[in-house]
Length: 80
Image 1 (cartoon, rainbow, N blue to C red):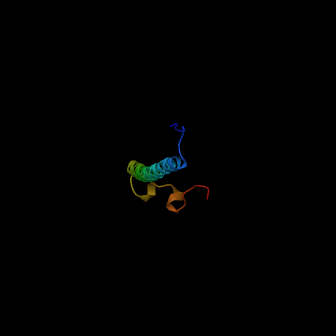
Image 2: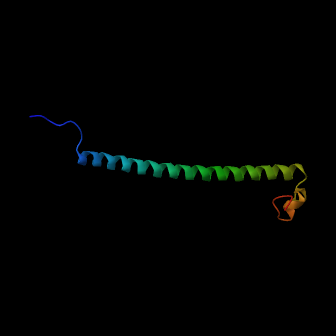
Image 3: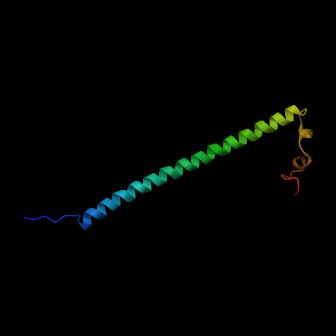
């Protein structure tokens, strides 16, 4: 009895389904990790901003008088 070489349609569909399931799990985990990394980056940026402001205020004598005029007025850029 001679056997045909190759895969049946059902075998190919099962393999494709397994690959799609693994890919969807991988993408989900990757997106969750990227979101967490962005949160960590934002916390780090905020911390660095706060440290810089504290150092600036401390070195210049303290208080809001040490801030530039545009920040005292609530503007974030000098040329607004």
